[in-house]
Amino acid sequence: MIFFTKWQGQHAIILQNSDLTAVILPEHGGKVASLFHRSKEFELLFQNPHKTYRKAEPGSDFSKFEACGFDDAFPTIDPCDVLVNGSIIHYPDHGEIWSATFEYTVENDSVILTYAGRLLPYRYEKTFCLSGASLVCKYRIQNTGKVEFPYLWAFHCLVNCEKGMRLIYPDGVTTITNVLDCNSFGKAGSQYPFAESFYRLPECPMVKYYITGKVKEGKCGYYYPRKNIIALIKFDLDSLPYLGFWCTDGGYRGDVNCAFEPASGFYDSALGSYRHGTGSTLLPNMTFSFQIVTTLN
Image (cartoon, rainbow, N blue to C red; front, side, top):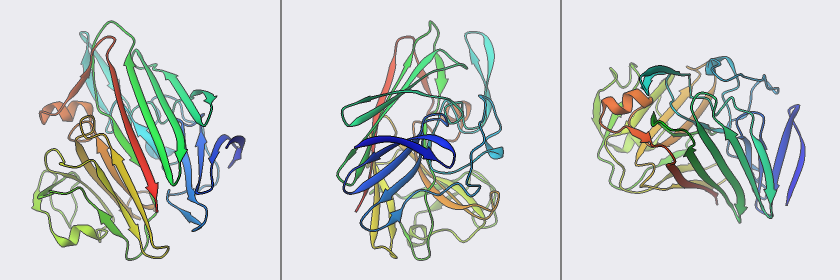
């Protein structure tokens, strides 16, 4: 079932079946504002603490708006300046998708959202549908111009934290690489052997790290003991071979949330991923396609 309503004062599209309710905000980057397991009365996504949304414009400072729910970071996470066809283009904080207004259509049990890039010539399409206890997200990003451009895509899905929760990693993780300077993990670029402690939430105000190198399995997730629920995220390994992890315990604006971040590159910016030898380029007429499925059981 698909219907329309208001969510914290914003136009919202609701997808609902017997297992889940998903709330999508087309005027706020096509953000999934809520993913709720109905029988267990469990909300996965970190909620907007302000109970209202301000409308960002392309290029807005991400930190001044509502960092909540599930949206997309494209064509970068960290702001950076890149060379496109001989000109310097500024990629803004967390890219331009999170601030975009999407057009949408409804086809059978799916919602299809589309956006024509302003920063660069591309068509961005994402399709949402529910399948049992899963939210299925399909993406198509097509270069509609005549020049190639570098990009980074990252899954920016902020989830709730609770005491005793466990993190679920892909198989075969051996090392993590720190991204942010902090007391617990040292300087950015420091590497550490993967250990049992990484299955627990880090005890520090704010942390970001990546699995070192490409992951060997396209899955990650969380176990919430209070509701005895597993949130499992499956992603296309060929398209998103790198995996970051973010957590804030009050260190970022007082928010408390965490996020596994499957990504196309390592790490955190379109420019930085090239410096690490993992950059991606969207050629003219090329389409970058992939799927992410989030299941609550």
